Length: 239
Image 1 (cartoon, rainbow, N blue to C red):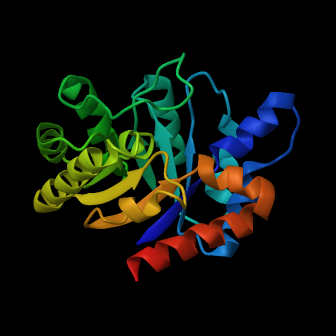
Image 2: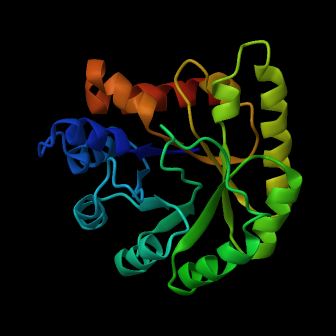
């Protein structure tokens, strides 16, 4: 299983003071040195953290594959086609939210998503959809032609301990369904070293994309230490 490091909240710290530091590119380079397998960054419409220039630099100046998270917005789609990241993950986005609050409404937005997915795939960009683990949604993803889904793990990670088993069962069933449909299964949102044991009960996981908890741990351990700690936890629970 691979680890993708989301560097959004390195940029959040920078934007809070309008400085040039800390630099998400530095975080990406250190994460690579620590053994990460990919870098994720979310270019939001409101540019609250990651900026366009960050994406240019992350694409060209660090060694790992770049996964660009983005909403299905024409301006951002055009930017993605220009940048040509290794992967695009389409996510829902609301201006008022603190962070992504749930999976993409693939069924309800099917007609709007299909042209974007086609454009990206024709450009040679791998496309994933950030989704909740329900069968109808996953079947729509497969029908749309994507080869990867990222299961939204936030409902499990943020749930009360008494509610977590039910959310975990949904993730397990969703991952099994996605695998049977021929989809690669990634996962992300809210994952920490404290809850990763449960996450790794989910079958067929290819990559975990983790950001906020890694940047938070990096305050105390440094980015290299935080990435190494997460990789160690992943190996321990898999072993």
